[in-house]
Structure formats: C-alpha cells, structure tokens
Length: 335
Image (cartoon, rainbow, N blue to C red; front, side, top):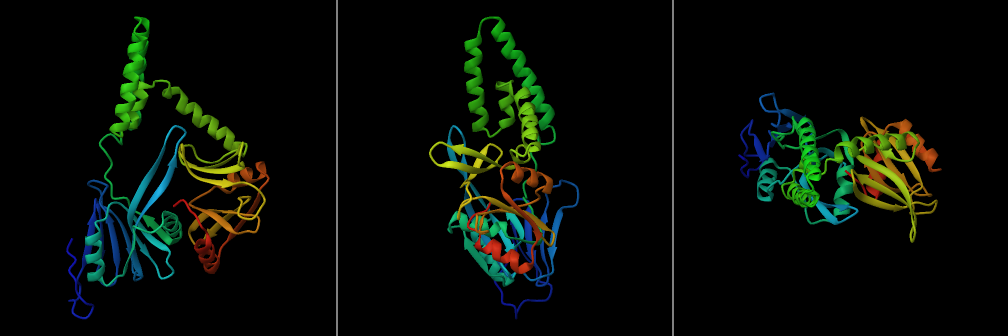
C-alpha cells in the first residue's frame, strides 16, 4: 500500500493512492477510482473504473444466518464497498480488508470511510443490496488448483468410493466402511473440501443430479423459485406458526417470513428494473417492502410461482426516486 496522509492542496499532480486486499487493489488518482482484480493468472486483470468521485467507502462486516436441518451456524461476511452520493453501492469488494490500511487510504485520498463493521447485520445487508447502475463485485480470490478439475475429480472420487464400498460389503466388512465413511465426511468438513464427500457417500453421484432434476420440475410447476444450488424462494406450512415463506441459498435458510395477506406478512412480489439493475422485492398486503433480493429473476418463473401460490405480482421499471425509497425502507435483504 502506498497511501500517505496528505491534504488536497499539497498533493502533487498525478499522485496515486492505493490499498490492497488479497488479489484486489483499489486506487484513486484524484479523478478516477480504479479497482484491479488480478485473479485471472496471466490474463489481463479485471478492472473497474469510475470517473465519478466516490462519496464514501463502506467498510463492512455482517453475519448471514445459516440454519441447516442438523445444525445452526452463522457465516460472517466482510469487505469494502464504494458508495455514490445517494448511498448506492457502485463497487463491492468482499474480503478481509485491514482497517488501518483502509483508514490511511481514505485519509490520503480524501474519501470518507464509514466503519460499518459493528453495525447491525440487517442494516449492512440492506445497504449492500441497494446497488447503483453499473454495479460490480470483485472477489480478489485466486481459484484453487482443483477448481478447473473439480467435476472430473469429484466423479472419479465418487466412483472410487463406490468401488471400495462394494468390495468391503462383499467381504463382510460393512461396519468398517461405515466407520471409514464417517471419518472421511468429518475430515472433508474440517478441510473445507466438500467435494471429498462424494468419495465417502457415493450415493451423492446419483442423488445430486436427481435432486437438481426434481428442483427443475418443481420450478416448472411454480412450487419453487430460483435455480438449484442458488438463491431460492419457496413456501411451507408450519404446524405452530402457520404458512411461511422461506428464502434459501443452496440448502441454507437465510430468511423465514410469515406468509399471509396481512400487513407485515409476505404476500406479493415486485419484480423491478432500474437502469441496468434488476431484482425482486417481497411485499406485504399494504405494498410495503419486507425483503430485497437483487439480481436477475426470470419473469416467467416469477409469474408461475405467484400464480401457484395465489400471490400478487407487479412488474415495472422504477424511477430513481422509487428505487431509493424502496431500498431505504426495506428492513431486510440478501445481497
């Protein structure tokens, strides 16, 4: 990092201030903000450039609820965002940005920085979901060596696991396989190499494609909204709390809303377009936003889902004022 505290008046022309996290470098030359993400190896790095002066930096950390069927955990997300004059996110740079380095860069570049690392997670999530036109996200994480070969390696591991399981079962050592399988699954979670799971649970070779096919059939009937493994919306009936709307990322529950035609209960969608941004707002019976889901949502899938669940659906282009009003009053989001 080459940022040094200086005032705007005594900086020489062409002075460039920068701060780096992982493979991402954020720099400011007094006129242009540039983020360079060198995760592409020998190819030219991905770059984001904005000639509009950033209003402030947003140094954030938040907990994303992650409740699974068998356990409960919270995933912590952190990073640095660049906001425009309206507080909309121009650039999102997830990663462990060092607070003193960010502060030094901000002072040297003359850009205010907001410390949102101790703010309520819900507030941070809603702020990050409010995206400006031209929004970009750069991760700055170099792909692992196995990333390119993950699929063939996973299949090969599953076939090898199936062969070992079959052999041990044939010679009467099924209890040995069960012990080895339990140990292997635990090791895969410790090493965070979940692709190893298929080696110790060969049935996943069949169950995963079958699960994806069943998901697509449910989506075609309007029972579920979203892609397999991604962000999905569905409903269920809870014995004690009544109908619920669930928002999941993969197998992880990130939001659980009451599903009725009442105020403060989910019962409608607003499918919006704003400049080059698209997304979905979950609304209550009064039209007030409850949850913001930015990103592309196919209109035909949204329509099938709302028809199947007897929900209201509104699709429209938002003005700048409408978009600001919705993002600022929405109490929760999944960025």
